[in-house]
Amino acid sequence: MPGGRWLLAGCRDGSVWYFDLDAEGTISPALLIESPYPESLASTNKVRLVFSVDLLSDVAQASPPGSYHLTQFNIAIVASHIRRTADTVISVWRVQIALENDSATNLRKVELLSTFHEERFDDVWSCDLYGTTVAYLGRPTGGSTSIIIVDWPDAAGQTDTNRITRRYISTSDDARAFLLPEDRILKVVNYGAGASPGEIQLIHWRRDCPATSTPPSQQTHPLPIVGPRKYGLPLIYVSSVTSPAVIANELRFVVPARGHLYGLVIPLSFALRPDANIQVELLVTGEINSGQQMRGVGYRQMFSMTTLNERKQVRA
Image (tube, rainbow, N blue to C red; front, side, top):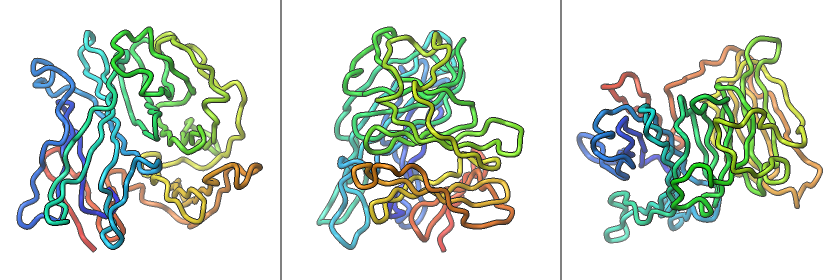
């Protein structure tokens, strides 16, 4: 999380835990959000889980100047059990930082904003959350891989997967999607062989992707109506693409690719630059270590997940 104190981690039972990296002595996990599945399913530890914190919209409330931590944020969780009879469960929670004498002590969930059921997925790779929109990327049983976009307030409480309004964007398995302001979504994807197997696209999903209640497994060609401009890149290390940073009314990403490190610059608002799309900048040339298991948490800390049973934290 921004500020480098809180580290969130998902568990194979479908729950989400957090670590306080500023704690003295041994750093131990604490439960933040329970599994959405009953104990009989959660105890099997066979849940695929991805989650995303909304850092761009106004719901992410900052702390007073000088502390550099959020005081409140929303988190979306996509939990998919491998059992074929179990639906995927998508939930959006509000989390606050508990304070004692104006000092942060722990994280606590305060409100379940939305939960709804989705079809079972053979694989689910990532999700993203912005405002009232959640996007998740996966391959449904019997269907094709796609990015699925849902307005989560409209889907709240829905357990019938045939009654959820969705929008689809086709993609490969090796991809990520980032929801951006003004109904835009950035797709970062690899399509395999060739001189430029990596590709990035900026799509206006509400304008160009038809709304439908067709379930994911029955979607055959979920392409946008308008084909946005594509930018070819070398093989992209998708899992290491950074979350966007807002600098001078621009969204900035860092994209590690084979032999290169790229920067993406996207206007925060089309009202400021109506003709702008994506500006691709070459930052570094040379072999880039993908660091698939490395994650930054603030400007002076990082951690690495080395095995299922060993966790290391490093401070510069």
